[in-house]
Length: 208
Image 1 (tube, rainbow, N blue to C red):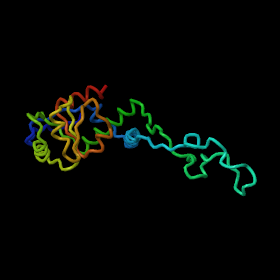
Image 2: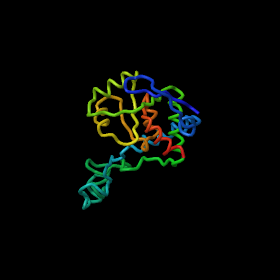
Image 3: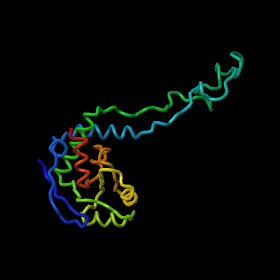
């Protein structure tokens, strides 16, 4: 069973916590993590680009010129793609780029990502993280004490508005509720910070 040191906001070790094998000691499946990241990024694509075909552009209610005798090629409508202002041939239309990933695979990808963080020593467990008022500097100081110099994800058991406001202006630092955790968020951040309560919540939600 994996273990992790517990730190306070001063950066001092104040204890140790046992981590669940099912969540933090699972087999690391790199291909599944890659698939989960690709699926997450695909769901972020809006796919809102759109062009008009010949049936959608304005004009073209009559034949532009007679069929014969003009010396010009035959034409039935000025909405044809060969004319300026005509429709676009095979142009992009709004589409859904999302990829379906089964719940079991998403959960295994997340446990693989968390287990990889534990293995690499990139999971930091905090005894508690309570801020009296929204202060970005306070979160910056806490991260510095914990030697967090790269992008970090702060995981809390419930949404903490004070913490969200304090961390949102720090480049590379994001906050997330334990039950909304996903493989992409874990992998894209160098360090993952969790409170004791967040660890318990993650094990309850994703350990079943």
